[in-house]
Structures are given as C-alpha cells and as structure tokens.
Length: 230
Ligand SMILES: Nc1nc2c(ncn2[C@@H]2O[C@H](COP(=O)(O)OP(=O)(O)O)[C@@H](O)[C@H]2O)c(=O)[nH]1
Ligand SMILES: [Mg+2]
Image 1: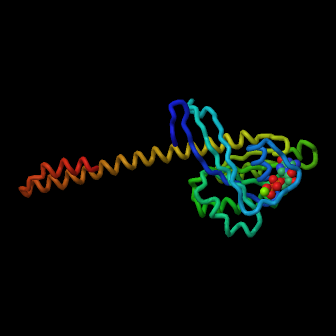
Image 2: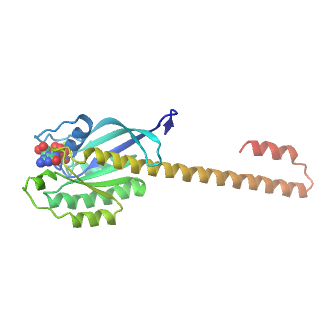
Image 3: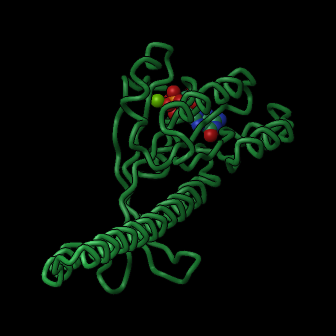
C-alpha cells in the first residue's frame, strides 16, 4: 500500500476459477477491454491481465487499485496446477453458468480447495454468469439455493452478463473493496501485534535489569542500549 497524498494505492491479485465455458475469459475481456467474443477460445493454463481502477472507498479516501487478474483454464488437468495460480491471491472470483447446474456444483469444490490452500484470508465472490439468457426468456433460473450457499460461505453473490455488460464493473469494484478491508484489517492487527511484542520485550529487559540491580551489578548503560535496540 502506498499513498501519494491524494490517493492510496493498492496492488491486488485476483484469480478467476470455474468450469470451462462458464464465461471467465469473457468477464475479464469485458472488464479490461470492454469486448465480448461469441466464440469460446480455450484458455491454455492461465493468463494475466492488468487493470487499474480509481474510486472513493467507504471511508471517503480516494483509492487506486492495480488489479492483476489471473484467468485460468477449468479443465480437470488444471486442478493439479491450480495452487500455483491461486496461492498469493487476495481475491477469488468463482464463476458458474446459470444455465448449467453442474457448473455451480464445481464452485463448491473450488471453494473447498481454495480454503485448504489459502485459508480464509482470501476475499471470495461467487458469480452466476449469462444472466441475459433469463432476460431473453431462454431459461428459467432460481437464485435462492445459490444465494443460500454463498451466505453459508460468507461470500457475496453476483449475477452478471459479460455479453450485455451487466454487473461486471460492480463485481470488480466490490471485490476490490473487500480486499482493501482485509488488507487494512491485517495491517492494523500486525501493528497491534508489533506494539505488544515491543512492550513485552521492554518489560522483559526492565525485569532483567531489576534483577541485576538486586544482585548489585550496575546495569545503567546496559539498560539504555537495550531499550534503544528495540
Ligand atoms: N449468453 C452469454 N454467453 C456468454 C456470456 N459470457 C460468455 N459467454 C459465452 O460462453 C462461451 C464461453 O465463454 P468463455 O469466456 O470462453 O468461458 P471460459 O472457458 O470460462 O473462459 C463463449 O461462447 C462466450 O461467448 C454471457 O454473459 N452470456
Ligand atoms: Mg477461458
């Protein structure tokens, strides 16, 4: 995190996970280049794209986020490589296709795997893509079991259409806010920990010096040099 006086800069890594053909590449292409391709082009292993966004954070700070977005392939073979890509990620976008229930079941597996590798430290958002199919009357879709599952996992749920550019910017904005929150909370926790460790060290030094005093050894200089070394 850096601050140039007018805005605070963050750099985050986001990984998109989900079965093949759910629209991961399309979501990224829409967000980064405002493009949509009707043809599915298989993503080979993984690719990185970057986009910077500026916005006003909830505490009225102007923030600038540099998002390194990792597009992955959903094939089974990718599973063994997966951790290489999502380790070190600040956020994960788990995508399913609302017209394909099986792709939603895969999300559950990805979440389990993510939590095993990176723990709870990652901001997770579940995305049901291709919502335009409902609007076009092509399919029927009941969102409630998906919302319930997302809630049980403490994850937000978004409905998007990469095709019609619906909710795409909102999705990346929201995950950025979650990553900022997690980052700031971690920094505050670390600062508190450092303060209490330093306090503990100081107390220990003072305690040792008191004992030395009692044994008649002059510790005046030792005391000051040790304190400065903290
Ligand atoms: N109707 C519709 N089709 C989409 C949408 N997003 C992607 N697709 C199509 O779904 C197919 C797979 O998309 P792709 O981004 O390659 O999926 P990926 O394998 O998850 O990266 C392509 O034919 C896309 O044109 C969407 O929002 N609506
Ligand atoms: Mg792809």
